Image 1 (cartoon, rainbow, N blue to C red):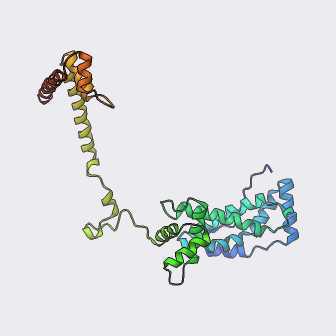
Image 2 (image 1 turned 60 degrees about the vertical axis):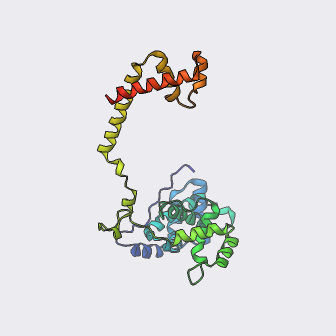
Image 3 (image 1 turned 90 degrees about the vertical axis):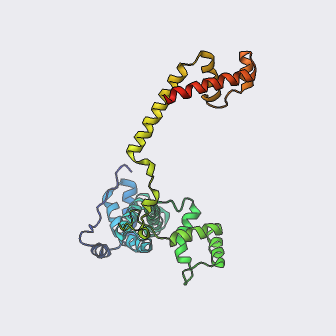
Amino acid sequence: MTHTLSLPVPSAVGSIDQYIQTVNRIPLLSEKEEFELATRLRDDGDVEAARRMVMAHLRLVVAIARGYLGYGLPHADLIQEGNIGLMKAVKRFDPDRGVRLVSFAIHWIKAEIHEYIIRNWRLVKIATTKAQRKLFFNLRSMRPDTGTLHPEDVQTVATHLGVKPEEVVEMETRLSGRDVALEGSGEDDDEHAAPIAWLSDPHAEPSEVLERMQHTRLQEEGLRSALAQLDERSRAIVQRRWLTEGDSATLHELASEYGVSAERIRQIEAKAMQRMRGLLSA
């Protein structure tokens, strides 16, 4: 099929309730009508056939989306994502499989809604594997009437969903938690301190950063200048002992290289360092 499936849906102008009332008035398709439309779409790329199939099943999306209102996301957004899943299902539907579109589309509608919830429910990733996603979307309904999971409940849920008990506990903790405003209430007292105050870095103020950068630059320039005033052997010893990346040279290694004792190398190093300190402090 070469056509792009871009289909108009009832506008939600006014309220979500008006949208729901509108889609609930759209006639359902008989099995024969659905088969004929699906065949036209599959064989001829008939976009009008696809539109009629989508429109007739919008009420299904509304019903499925209603089951996910407990996650605190707008009903209209859930419906919109579900409609995308419905259109994907219509595009892939094969009437010769012997099943009705309503049964085939449920998977695609739920898949789109699940992805939307995972992306938007929290900033932190909460379900990255197939088993964790199953846990995320089933844990609420599997909680006992008290709303609290006891150890035996945790084990039951873990066994039923094929996950580890500790994963059940972690997901329960995340689902029970509340999002906290980063900026807080705006009150300045310690009792109402906002989380953003805990994250502040007193050393990140721009003027302090620039001052540290300038100080570092001056130190590097001073070091290069002081090294330049040493004789070649003293400069090499200081650089090999203190200014090389990785392992520095030992006194004995340098002594062997220059044909002197390790004590003599130590004396040259001490004298060079003393001179450099004087030049840097001047």
